[in-house]
Image (cartoon, rainbow, N blue to C red; front, side):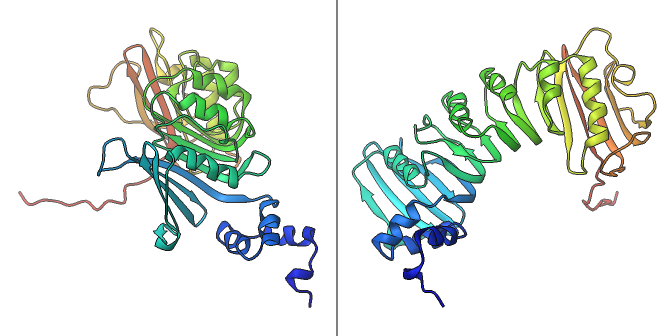
Length: 331
């Protein structure tokens, strides 16, 4: 039986490529040759998450937490003093903690360099949340699922631009941040998104651009999307959606608009439910049939159109009965 030291470098790299981050770290500490072999082997994490939180102990002090599969590293500090904690499964290993006389963001950048191969960080799914600093030059990930939430200080476009250097094809892309930044919409047409696209910003996407998006699980806002395009997107959703998919479009509401006649196909089996204080053109109902679905998902669909002065929100998803118990109080 061959032993490890007798294997060729290529064979070792093939084996290392199957290891998770924790196992790679342990192997890397065995010898200089093992360290060099590990460092030269491409690593693709299952998931990578990056979160920054404010410290409750000191003003200006933040905690940058990075989870890489089961490994976690914390960069804690302010100005030029940083405590680095490491651990697995969210638990700190005190024996691996250290203090560095450097800014936490500089220490974080060096960590990114360590997990990069040829300047690229490989991960299947990436989540970025509550970040207050600009993206470091070393942040150039390659992933298929990306979720970006609440990027602070108007840095959202910079983080996205860096994230899209090597990543152009996504299964899922979700962007949810405070404020309005139309620069986000300018980045979307260059991407290929197949399953899910959730954007809570105004995107300025045109009919052609939004209809080119392959994702069926869709949440998009654009004042340039016409009612005619919204109807086509709605019909496509009924035909191609899976049970977990949902559709939400936020578009301009033209004068005299009526959802039932302008968007809802006449061949559908629909039951309308009037709501209190419903404005003209608004609609709430359930679709029980009258459409074809490629995934054989024929559950009832809940459909709604709410008008906000000169704009409106159109939504559709599989209707789920409430699982909350009903309590009848004695009178």
